[in-house]
Length: 391
Image (cartoon, rainbow, N blue to C red; front, side):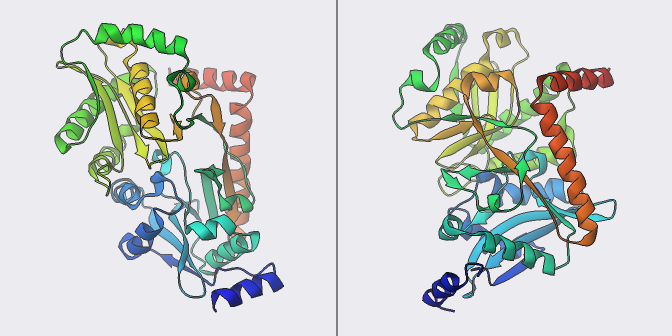
């Protein structure tokens, strides 16, 4: 069908969809060409091939997850979108969810830009119907999706959805914003006073790791210090889970076309020690934090993590970035820098009769989590219970 004919058909029938075929691919290599072609159009850096490929290899496969890559095409076999999913089995239910697991802050399809801008409810109905016809999954569990990205609406909002359990604090950066507009001048002065004490240490510097030796050295330090910090907070060390460290190393080493990496590492250090390290993903418009830690020495009293965060904000503002986030969660320090909130949503879509009950249960559980996280009394009660269970 020609584009003119397709447009005429859609005018005559508003429920006509541009999606003519939906394929399921179980091999990343077979989907790679389409995947990489869609990456620069409309997607988040958490869905880059160079981010999710090592995740699947080192983490997903250990969890017995099977690739479930959904590609939708138009009538002329041009790819319109790619959903990078994986199937897990839970109590006999086949659940298709985004690759990346807990290591991806945001989840999105990779969209052809023009299609994303004009997608209709009919297109999303056709997408779900096409997935359902393959009878390979019982439910779509699509969590932590941003309502918009780079100022454009996420078409998946056209599906039934609900707020995610957690919010994501967000810093918006206007072009050529003054330093005081990004971070309050009073806060800058406090951090400057602390930093002057660190600047007296030999070799004090801030930088973005670029060489493989720098990346390897910082990651070696991170995996040694982070468990101590987690233990101090009585939190489980997710970086000790099978395959996670190798996934992070491979993604940090994966060079992109612009000289950056699938995960970038920022650090401040001296000749004698690393003071703080933050790692995250960047795409020319937004930087999203993934993981961080800071020194166990007495120099930690000078708040090197906060000083590094200020440096990162100034770094990306200087590059013309428009947004920055420090990850999903309610940590107090995030609100010191990020005054806005990124709206995030979940969708639980049944694909089979068995999937209806599972979708309902997952939806109810996430609604309960959202209620607890957004009710101060319930949240404090949950924190006390969690602390008691860890003793």
